[in-house]
Length: 300
Ligand SMILES: Cc1cc2nc3c(=O)[nH]c(=O)nc-3n(C[C@H](O)[C@H](O)[C@H](O)COP(=O)(O)OP(=O)(O)OC[C@H]3O[C@@H](n4cnc5c(N)ncnc54)[C@H](O)[C@@H]3O)c2cc1C
Image 1: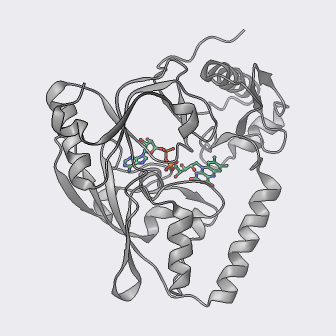
Image 2: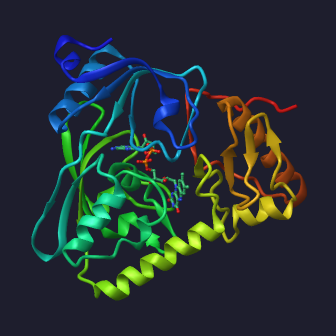
């Protein structure tokens, strides 16, 4: 599967990805690799490219739904890319696998803020950049100065912010392996900033099912509309298939109430999408990325 050089990198065969995704669903990765630096990521990608082996990058698995049968090829887990260094003028350079909560806490220790956009959900720096994660309180891309990423040929490239094409939950980082992200953060008045962060946490705890396993918002918001409100208006909160249920707290969250399979979630997603289309004419698109299951099965 991977060459002797790349095998020096820590890997685990047949690791269930359910232990690496927040919705706790997913079969084994054929190979799960834990590179320790950008060179090891590049080595893995080059090796896969030469052998025609598929590869993908896993952060905290908080925006993923992985097939019950698992995924072929090499899954690059960024857990060990956790560096962080501070420069002048609010520059912070973080490894792709660093948790955004750690980035935020370390920034605040130095009087820096501007990361309201990463508050209240699990993510890595790399996953957040790739997804341009955020919402009402801003988006990650707005704080990014440059991104270092391994491209499909195994070369490390530095992309200035403008080359990242940050949009609504999209970026040009898809298909790359982000290894480092440079943020430019403003100095803040810490007491006021902490109060604002606490208010965001409180608001999210009230409005979202944070204690239950989920992958966050299942659907993208249609232009000028809210997917959660549409699902709610169609009376779909509490709708369940197997162990998967539309949260009773927030219509755009599908929660794993115990033993849910990927297939359960896909059938539920399909049913919700059909009902919303039938009743409102709006076609919902999934925001959560599905690995290893290409076709949404017919429900029923
Ligand atoms: C309770 C909850 C609340 C959430 N709330 C929000 C919210 O308010 N706003 C929001 O935007 N999202 C939210 N999410 C979704 C999710 O947390 C974000 O999309 C997050 O940024 C994903 O980061 P991750 O590290 O978990 O990425 P993963 O889920 O591991 O991966 C997501 C995508 O990013 C890619 N990726 C990951 N790391 C890298 C890398 N180093 N290089 C290249 N590609 C990479 C993966 O291949 C995949 O395509 C929520 C999720 C949960 C569970």
